[in-house]
Amino acid sequence: MTLMINAASLDAAALPGAAIAFASETRIADEQPHDVAAREALLDNAFGADRFAKTAERLRAGRLPAHGLSLAARRDGALVGTLRCWNIRAGGVPALLLGPLAVAASHRSLGVGAGLMREAVARAAALGHKAVLLVGDAPYYARFGFDAALAAHLVMPGPVDRARFLALELEEGALDGAEGVLAASGARAGKRVGSAHRQLRRAA
Image (cartoon, rainbow, N blue to C red; front, side):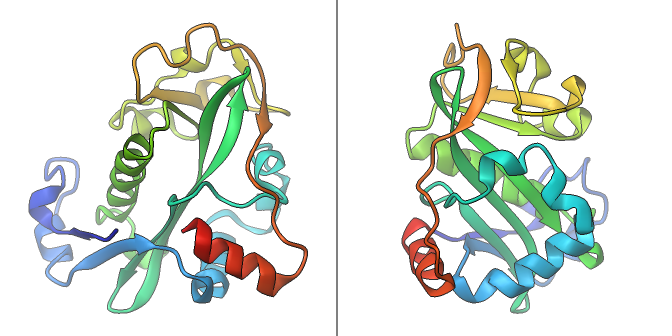
């Protein structure tokens, strides 16, 4: 599945100058194994060397991303954005953990992140997922329907700013009664790099 972003498909009020920025199209499609090196460099630039110390990494480490939910944004052939989702159990309820979302410094404030978010949420719903959780800036993610109140009875497996621990129900009431610590539930990644790449191709 490929999404082609243009100014008309985005919130122009929230994205000043989007019409000019998208004169050259940005494409969102499945991440491919050959994207790995560029993705790692993009994430290092966006989050720094301590990104693996984040609590959310405990739910991603050693796991494969959720099927169909590893996204890459490209412009003129270059990787300019990345987003992945991961299978988890939220207090016993099947859900997704979204992140990391990152956009190259040269392409921020151009709607790339919003495009990735909209595509991820749409795909998650189409694939039958009922809820999505993330840790991030509440004012930014509120536009996509994420709310800290929906995660009030859930706990990350480590320190987290509660105001940044957000959830979205793709089906109303999906998180009713969900409480407790989030746990990883995705398929485990292969030990060999080549094997992991082949599994990523299938997952994408």
